[in-house]
Image (cartoon, rainbow, N blue to C red; front, side, top):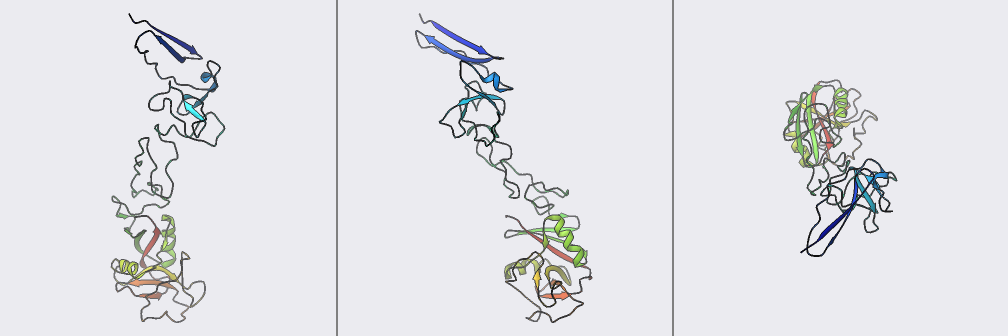
Amino acid sequence: MAVLVCFVFRFAFRLAFGACVGLATAACIQAEPFACEDDEQCMGLGQPGRCVEPGFCAHPDEGCPSGLRFSRFASEPLASTCTMPTDEPSSSTEGSSSEGSSSEGSSTAGSGSGGSSSSGDPIPVDPEECDGIDNDGDGLVDEWSEINEQCNDCDLFQHEGSAYWRCSNGRWTDVQPVCESFGANLASIQSADENLFLALRTLSGANWIGINDIGDEGVYTWVDGAPLRYTNWSGGTPPGDNLDANCGGINTQGEWSIFNCTNSRAGFCEAPHPD
């Protein structure tokens, strides 16, 4: 007849270490997970320990990159797994284990990617909404998303790594600050493809873009500092000096001209944004 003896040692508010001695095949009763609040609760049988987020004991283990392994009395799936490495010398870590819960701050700001969950799957990112908040954490506000195509008198677009806002009429010097409030600038056109994309979305007349010679008459630059690699001036050449016209616009044919900056026109804002 099988005899089973199960010894359970409890230290400091329910910390348990069990040992079973059997004369035939048998099993111990599974101990309940033990939650801790401080390091003292994790000291037992002479073994050093620390209370680690999310509130379970961990003990030194050179086989773990963090140097700590959760005890078998942590809750599943953390039990007996390595804790996440941390630079902090305190008793908490920024996460759990390779099989455990995800760590805070695992998402990368400005990227729009949400990090990984405990299963290794990407954490869903909130879509951008029209609410003046950077919902998806990419550094931009009220940009295009599948549920956000028009916001604050701006029509929103996405094209080949850039987000665009076509905003309602204003002076060039008024539209640029509006762009900056989104984390953008008046658009800098870098290719014929991009030029066509904006031309097809240009409202009647001409719409503001970022090219200008405000700082140095006759020297045209993009307001965001991008290089002037591509141009499509009306007539094929940049306009001559004109102190009354310093701000650029694109027409429905994709041609650029320079206008008085106080004209009221719709304008295109642009910012890098992964498709």
